[in-house]
Image (cartoon, rainbow, N blue to C red; front, side, top):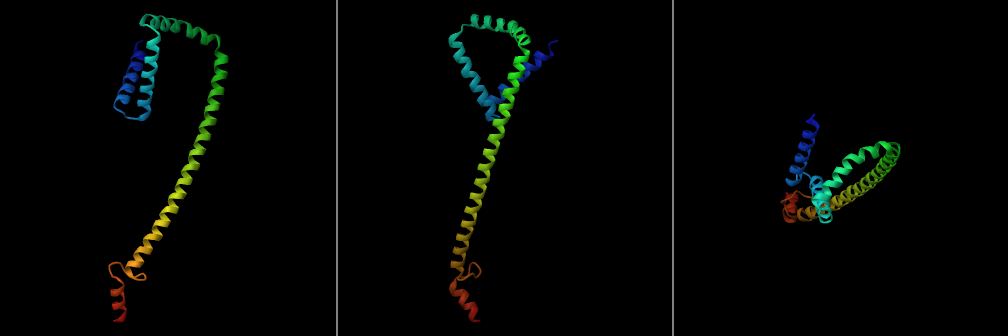
Length: 143
């Protein structure tokens, strides 16, 4: 009967370790946001008030959720649909920017390659092999 509570505590400990060790930026951001929120709540509520509110919510919230289940489910569906829409919009926007960056990178690479070939051909004297200057290329042509 305590297994779910132990699993929840272990999950919290694991998240805190990930946040402290900066395993991912998401965990660290969540940890910092929770710390900031708790500091603001701690300014407003004393420990006794926070315990009272927590105790009250623990018993009142399940009853309220049961009474308003259909409304909560409808609102949740709307929120999930909007979140999916925003996620698809963001994904398309990001992919468009990634494609634009790839094409720009390809253009820059082609321009750099052309400049490099111009430099190499200038050093070799009309496309000869590198390491042989124009004088050596002319001498090889006379033989």
